[in-house]
Length: 503
Ligand SMILES: [Zn+2]
Image (cartoon, rainbow, N blue to C red; front, side, top):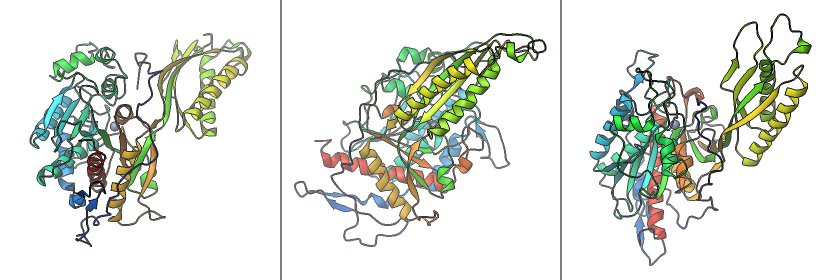
């Protein structure tokens, strides 16, 4: 949700990286199937890059994530902030780990301890973002980071964000137990307040890191619901209270990243419906949020004939129905999540109705068309189709253009996905177990994509349900996501070496 304190994110600079045509100068050996020994030990995993005849080993396809260890970590971390029990099993609860509350402090401490046990250096920035880095052979170069978030919605589940951070930690555990030296450093980042549920700005802390959201704006965000003392505390106050206002500037300049990869549950029904296991995410759809205010006139419900009415609630209802029809015509989406009327009396028409409008499309130009048509038709309906007429005013709250992830990161995820899917039973009608996807929701990766090559990996989400205590991704699908992440990160790591990032 958001309130009038939501910050306008308009006229922002577009991402600095661009999706260039696929340009990978080397190829991977397909490698062995998951859990099956190599069929060709003589050549498996060894590539020659053709530059000075140097051979570089790519035998990382023997590295496997540990499914039970991954699930154990997910549920161990979820002890901090577990809530909304729905079944008898210890893990059958949802989560209520609002950003920077006491449970969030506990899981942050657990994250730090886990990463330090893997010989990572853990730093914290001014937004409480936690960066755990495992040094590679070229430790002075920026690390590849695997990121997501550990905060949840007030009625959240055990996977949204949590799977991404734990997949990153599991990748580090696999590297650690195999004494695997990466070319560059590799790490995990826990972004603060991604949900925007407690402090009403989504992905605010990756936004500060990307230099899109000013630090002071983020620090001054006040919590939506007051604490027990009736006070609305700010982000900065709560960062200080739990000891996570770090010394490191929250900026891509202070903590540059070579790339950012994020595993996330799909939060929709597509993979499950099509019986596929992995979404190779190419970008995020564009969306805009508005607050629409309809003004009419309050008058008596019994004595005012229809012809004399300026009924703002009736008008708002027609506008919402119209926005739905317009979005459908353009294959987009429209949603009204909040609607309030004043004065709020059974037998009096509302003089003012305010509602939110969230419109989305994969293409910026189509989103602009949806907005334009809504503006034209809202004005017409308010004037001509609501008896004596009402007025409509628009306030733009958020403008988030479509995001296109980086071709090199998408290629690394795709190659890893293909290898992982080879070993899985064929379930889909066409035999393909993965698909390209465009994310319907915003993520921290939208902001990192502005400052470093980025892409995402989606896993199945039971019944497409998230932001709900019963949100679920099966252990097998959690492990598939982590395994794809492992392969993608190591492929990108090799790419860096081959193209001379470290020379
Ligand atoms: Zn999330």
